[in-house]
Image (cartoon, rainbow, N blue to C red; front, side):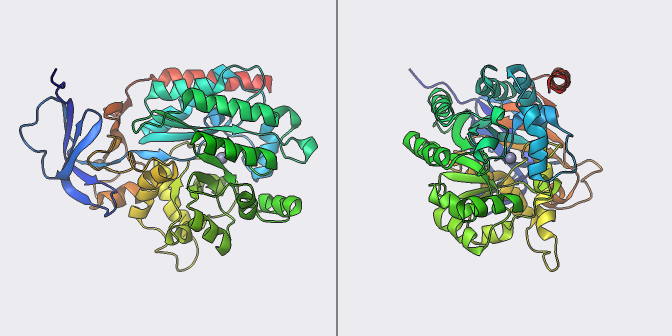
Length: 458
Ligand code: ZN
């Protein structure tokens, strides 16, 4: 039997920023998608005579980029936004743990849908959700998150989180918010077995993700790392976020966070950490030597007064760096495209830092950089033939951007650009500027309802 003919989408007459290794760009170019993969990218109109064209997009006035990759988030926080707005990390956590301990499956489902909708309409095509609150008997929270990503059409890395170091053991979270070591490990293993897909076009991958040095035991870090490596999945946690965390590690373990992670098997090419704000030169060397990745979350770090991560120094040493929204209880906007601009601006703060990050470096952090951090750089993160067709068309011809000649400069320095079309594996997630698979107003109503229910319970 002959193979079925390819089904193609042709996008042309737009600027194209491929974010390939050479930063190849076309002032006017095309992208052809065939059977979910990028078939060709180049200058001028698409080649003539293509068969099986199902959709032809005249993208005049647009910039095409790879889809954005969000490397750190906590979807459930969508229904606990706007609380403890003037606190540092530890005070904010202490205020929120008792609220989070009351979440259940319908709440997590609505919150995940809200987080995903907000990200998807802003150009995110792959998102990592670090979920670490699993109150006993509250349903299948991981399943609710995975269902929500499938409904929206966004690729998901579910970082199955955990906490086992309650207050009575010297940790920060209250005892009622933590799991036992054995329960956490068993549930994480089960989540990997059930949901992790190693395929190039995977819509769901799972990572092992104990929450942070001050909320998990040394044993959970050690055994979590062994579990991840035995199953061939990635490892994720929070690291070096605040001065308080640094103090905690020095008091409890007599070493800084990076040395502590090193001592528990948590540096390596298969590890990425959120924040990494308080790093000295030798910490950065350790990340560079081992290939450990960083999820840079500039808005959250500013919101919680955590500090500024040394992104230019990390990049100069070859450390993999991507961008993260972080949970929306510490970044209420919940968007990743605004983090391109915030990463650039925050890293320029200080005298003589005008070259600290460029617009193209910021775009790379949000796309190819994020793909590398999630271990998916062979398949997503740039517009190159053979890769998954995860791409975004940003509208650049409205009053917000039309007077800026360079579209990448307009995207990063300008106001958040509207997304006209977003594809994941060639399938639309946003079409004509609207989420194509879910109803945004229904999601808004569900998030309002579940946020109220949680506020009444907590
Ligand atoms: Zn976080």
